[in-house]
Image (tube, rainbow, N blue to C red; front, side):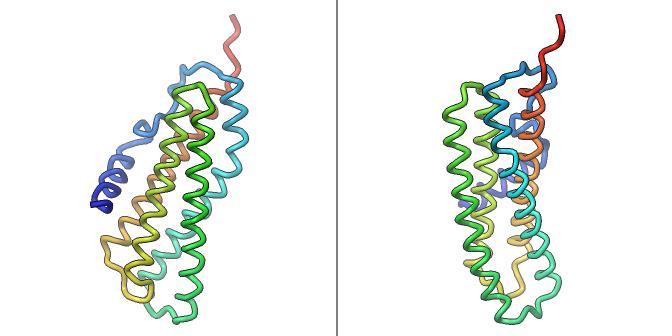
Length: 171
């Protein structure tokens, strides 16, 4: 059931970043939200880079299943650590969302957190199904779809950052 829910979430995410609360161009500037989002920007870029790297690595493994056992053991540790980091970041994002008064920013932060948790669930699924076996194509596609959801959430974050940090138009 969890897998179906996340697959549906990933599919909805692929329909467009509007599902993630991307800021409309006419959103008002918000200095407090701008400061909070600017503080999170480096973490966003690091998370997106890490997730894209993991997704690419999993695709590479799927295409080349002659991965030696020691590499599998190393990957298990790396992926487990990544799951913990993603879930910790999601908790931090929800904490920041609770302190920001701008509902648009709250939505974007909560959606980013949901996307990170979804990617963590996809990684856990890969670990549970074994990294040494040829992965189920649906599992591998699910991992890629959840990575795409994180990328869309990141795009929504960037659009919101740009919107709330924009200088108000001259009167």
